[in-house]
Image (tube, rainbow, N blue to C red; front, side, top):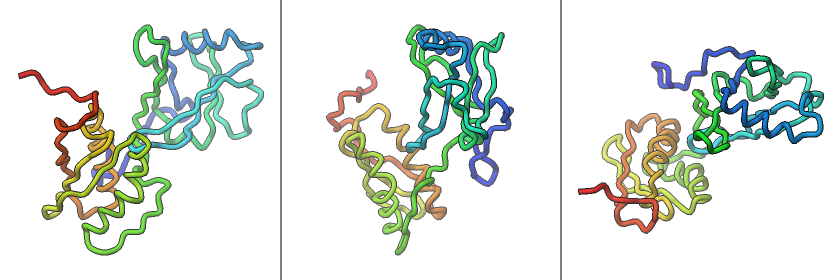
Amino acid sequence: MTSESGAPERSTADETKPLTVTAAALEVVLDVRAGEDDPANTALRVAITGSNMTDFTYALDLAPISDQAPDDLVYAQGEKGELTVIVPRASVENMTGAVLDVAAVGSGGLVIRNPNPPDPLAGFDLELTGELPQKVQAVLDQAINPALASHGGYAALVDIDGSVVHVTMGGGCQGCAASAMTLRDGIKKMLLAALPEITDVVDATDHAAGENPFYTEAPV
């Protein structure tokens, strides 16, 4: 979700209850909470701990309601207010409008769907000097490739055609089924945010040549 200027917009949902817990997720959380020593006085605490190239990262844990900090946001979820939710004040803005839900029916896993995009350059103090190729390489070296390295991958500059940057993805990213999303939601966003003179980022990778087992060619 972006504004007309291209800057990320924040959700306009109710900041007094930034995270909504669906009925399915509530059932999962209450079932886990039932194993606590004092379930009725135990809250679900949800905090944003950082972000990766595309999404925020979170910490979810059960804690005594009395452990809340003075500026924490504390509210009830469920038709009868069965679950107390605690959100640290520092997480409220970026979590407003988010939904805690089950990842898949019957899976028991939980997922947070957040309409607020993280700042792709948050936490990076980039040093961008020289011509455009040098600047692109600096963003790759300082911000993008350290994140991709944790998955065994990397991105490399292939060419610059006017204001369009062509990159290739290698290692664990070549042939990976998620690589298109990584390029679109991660690499592209970071390059466009860091270098306004760029208008597009194109994936020049030959994914069919990759050895990653997640890649499958479309049937003929």
